[in-house]
Length: 334
Image 1 (cartoon, rainbow, N blue to C red):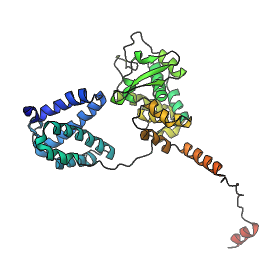
Image 2 (image 1 turned 30 degrees about the vertical axis):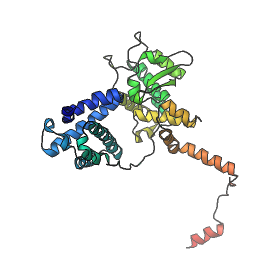
Image 3 (image 1 turned 135 degrees about the horizontal axis):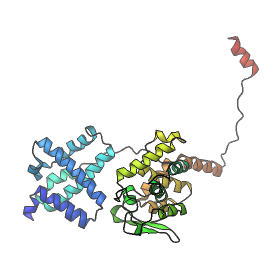
Image 4 (image 1 turned 90 degrees about the vertical axis):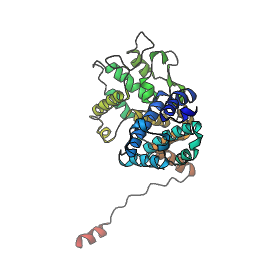
């Protein structure tokens, strides 16, 4: 154990292979995110120390260097505060692993763990109104070779509010076309949830159904699963097509996650309870789901009108003011 604790490479390997995979049971997406953070950090650390990455030591991982790296993430790479905090969270997890194996540097690691996350500005959630989302789905040309797949994909994203990783990992065996029709999604932290499917979504999925139920549902021309970038490209293509009839779509950046937000807002507008939507989307906390309530102007108007009616404060409509002839004559005389 002592030899292992003195090796940065050994501890990095055990962090991913032993801790993240086996102890924590992290998803492949989480492991990739942590990998990217540590790769960026080690490259930055090597450049700042003017040393090859293979020559880096545990003593090089200091709080001052971590703070410099976080500043670099924001200023040089142009990342947001949220991204900066995400990088910090990954580094904190890694340093906690170092501390478990290397208590001799406890004070060094403790200073890193004391670094606080920055307070980020919480921007309003971006989403499509139901008629806008339907316009994007209707923009798919079913006569095109991939038209059936693309329509099924657009409907699936809007129907289930699935994360893009959940959609591209979906296999036919996780679909149930009986009554009720539903899909089993594998979310963050290896959590599973069931989502109901609209009849329209079921029909679209049946059109691309294949005999091997272990195959991925959404694949490219070579039979490989679509990538995150591939889904984003397809969505962007149909948004631009739909913009011919709904030009307001060009003023927004519509990503697969915006379709997830759009599903949540549509559920809220339909009167579905927030706790039900939390389970529908696979949120760990109700606070995450509550963001959609604060972002929807239509719901705010309805709540305000209901409050006024309940309180008996609805005012009589005021008569519109019209200037008198004498006032107009006075102004004309000036």
